[in-house]
Image 1 (cartoon, helix red, strand yellow):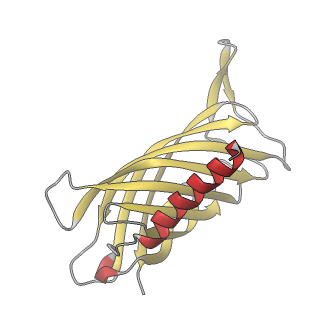
Image 2 (cartoon, rainbow, N blue to C red; image 1 turned 90 degrees about the vertical axis):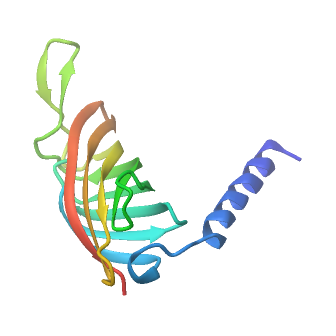
Image 3 (cartoon, rainbow, N blue to C red; image 1 turned 180 degrees about the vertical axis):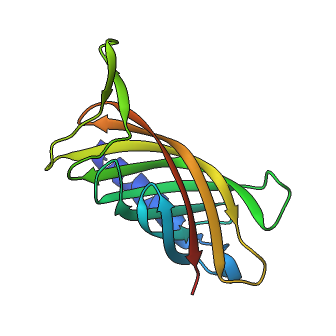
Amino acid sequence: MTPLCRVAIVALTFWGCLVTTSFAQGPKGKEFGFGIVIGEPLGVTVKYWTSKENALQGSIGGSYFGAPRVQVDYLWHINAFNSSIVKLIAGPGLGIGFGHEGSGIWYKENGKHDKWYYRPNDGIGVGVRVITGINIIPRNTPVEIFLELGPNIGIAPGFGVALDAGVGIRFYP
């Protein structure tokens, strides 16, 4: 068996596990929710629970990193507060910004001076996120409220660091 076939089998097995072991843990036992996020980015958000403690979260909207900006995060929900309502969330993510970037990302250029990270109007920027925050699911409601914060590390077309912060609400139909 070729190495490519082995990788394909492992990837399909992993994907199958994600799809077949879904345990709805959103509000009212639902798996999928959608809503709005205010902050970075400012736009719409979706969430799909893949297990009792894990979920995929995505957002699209306007951003200083590039407008529009699309991002996806893989989250762990940690019961740090010994509560069935409030959970700590943490996880890695990836963001892609399109078009002209605004201000908000800075870095040291060759150790000389602070410089605003800039990308041409038609450029694409890629960044890695590490998100932490709080997830609140009030009892007997189809609503989830969240607050998230973490670094966004620009990796292409150049290196840059910014702080992502957002607050939002999702509805689970």
